[in-house]
Image 1 (tube, rainbow, N blue to C red):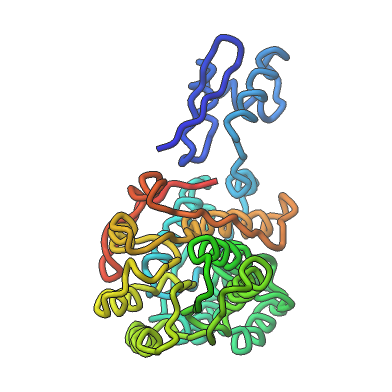
Image 2 (image 1 turned 90 degrees about the vertical axis):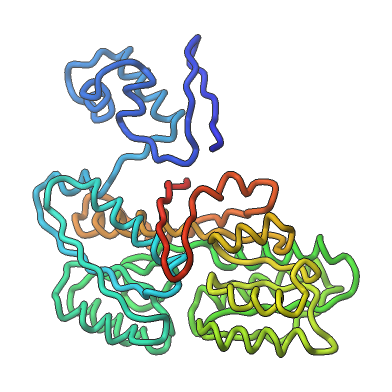
Amino acid sequence: MARGKLFDGSRLYMRDESNSVGIKNIAKALNISIGTVDRALHGRRGVSEKTKARVLQVAEQLGYKPNLAAQALKRNRHVSIGVVLPRHISYFFDPLRSGIRAAAAAVIGSQVSLEFHEYPRIGVGDTDSLEAAYARKYDGIIFLPGNIQRFSPLIRKISRNGTAMMCVGSDAPNTGRVGSVSTHAYVSGAIAAELLAHKLPRKANVAILTGELSTLDHAEKLSGFAATLAVQAPHLTLLPTLEGHEKPKEAYRQAVTLMRRKDRPEGLYLSTANSMAVLEALEELGLLGKVQVIATDLFQDLITLIKADKVLATLYQRPFTQGKLAFENLVAYLMRSEPTPPVVRLAPHIVLKSNLQLFANRVSGTDEEIDVEFDTLT
């Protein structure tokens, strides 16, 4: 795991880039008590100005960020939060749920209640599950907005009736939702296009296989990809986008049909984590390693393919961090303790063979049975 060196006079501090920094880290770095650090950070009595200055300096160097959700709940108000997410794709949604649980575990006592609701996959049972959560009368709901046309009227209704709605993984603007947390989808698409432009310097076809263009995240990835190709790689021709509708069999069928065409693409951007069926189709056709592939997110089979030079790169959407921030921002909004940014867009991480070791230990298991322990990436 990458570590950064921080100097303060003659002292040397080490920062683990994968872990969120807390008061304990600052206390350990300065060899002082946690209580002293807490008093210094919150301007309480009993700490000298010199010690306070050292604490604030090291806190800044280490990238310390206070847990706004925990601070808000010190006011002893109980809040209830429902989480409505699909079961599939577990590569993405299991670590996202883990981020929510980790943020909830950091709050004090039992002042927040958290309940999870699941539906099979995007587009199957999603609005019914959200309706069921709404009937539970939570103070707030964290959810993935799938098909915007179907979701928007429901989000507006729930918001008007007093439930704070926090989008995660995608966004639903102009619906009354209080905020959203996701990876910057347009930038993700742009990065994928630039990588393919460098790898394919001559005239060629490229294509996108996505999930649902009715989901804003997927539509924005397409926009970023197409716009960047037009500017940076006019020699590359973008074929019509294919939607797998998050159904592995459909994605497999479309991939086989696409790659058997005479004008088959030499570059592919798989803009959904639900990509294994497409990769299996390419493998069966003997095209993995010949076609340049940019994937999304990270799972064990994909790690193996990157190591074997069969997949060029993947764009990691930081699901644990998305879940953590969605929970913290929703609680902060409910407690009115801090102004909550309406939209948080995280920078995607580019995972290549050269830096795979920084990410590979974050994933284990398969999509059917996954055991994920993710550290927060900031």
